[in-house]
Length: 361
Image (cartoon, rainbow, N blue to C red; front, top):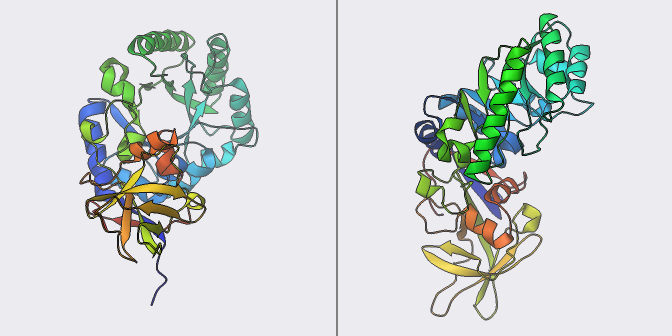
């Protein structure tokens, strides 16, 4: 008899693919679709979700760093795969060998790339800061970055295939201003001799709210996993399904029969609620969360409700039927965002990948 799992996550690959089709229809429009597989696909499983994204027709993938990019390159040898967070120890030679696209936001990165991968025409996305201040080149440094990039392109070291940026998404007015700053930066780049084939600035929120930001490519992240990037709308309201459903086994009952211990705690990546509003569900019945400890949590039954039986699997979040909490609910209880709820699930928690929509267990 095998070891009974204290907790596990069920990952619906079919729900993920359906979300990508929904994103293409409602967010990308005529633009290409880039899918973020960063942080092990927000805790869902990097290789598995990258493969599913390719199968669903994604035009490009994105991860944070070159090391992740090299791992995922084995999923598909030709799909554009962008990596944009670098340090002085980044392996640009490895990026060139793996045919990765690299985001570049500083001259020092260009020089490191030239030193490590000379003459290899590495595909580069130049990044301009348009107000978010997330590792793009500041406007006053942009002309010099463009000048040096043009020189290295002529020498055959790089190929500037794209110019891009991040939006702050704090307001539509600010995003419109950022979009104009972006177009101004593109004009400077073209005047400097660069001829990028692709412009991209929009992630899910801007693509939904301001279609003019879609340009040539839209980057989608957490919405692809069925978690909303908005404060006022759920993913389901936007037509996206939860991909991860997390379950914990009932390990014991209290002597008075009012509480049950479930086999998942903060040591497993479960974020403890900071409020008394938290709940979980089993068989359509809600149970309040009393505490979250290192390797377990304690729930209690409301008056007139029976506790789940020993060995039962209780859904913590992600039931697509809506009988369980959503990842966004846990985020509100824990004072964070839905991204962190799913990405925090520890790597030692088993993932079971399925080809159907997950149901409560």
